[in-house]
Length: 265
Image (cartoon, rainbow, N blue to C red):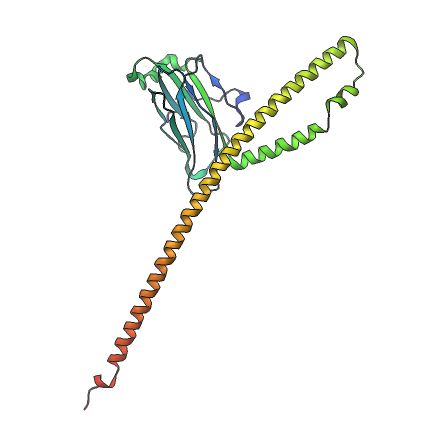
């Protein structure tokens, strides 16, 4: 994947718990942008994203870029969406070597001719801000997300100790100052509520990812069990063959060493 034009997102987007569209129009939609890698497994960790076009009649060209091209295999990493069927995109972490500084970004734009799906990205205008849709993919690991969920729980418990009633009773403001104080408190509560909703959504996404990874681990364990049973049967057969050949060799030696085979002088 090319790295041309790949730059860091704004500071508020650097968190693995946030993603946003940047651009003048939305060309693609996606159920989720969270990619959580199970880096503790033996094979390369991977996740699948589904992307589809917004307009039911438009042609959409898309491509993925990363600042770590040797660490990620994205398949397909570019293409054109010409119908209403979602396109599955598999993102694979090579060697399970994850770095929080890794970034993957999806670019998408509508095109008029299907033959333009590659050349459209060579147009210098596409490098201008807002020329096309930009989606930053959230990259993380199961361990990182579990730690984050634990930290959020502890933070919620700490905040619970300071109720709204306690905050109000601790204030002696009156008149306009009191009104301003209440408005600030209302804004703070609204922000906290928004954060909680985002955390709930993030936890639900994490739950789905972990359930999928657990199912994969169970399937992998089942495959390993079948292989172990097959190897055990093969081992038994080989052991039986070895005993049979050993017995045949013993009989041959006994016959050669018998009295009938002795030479009389």
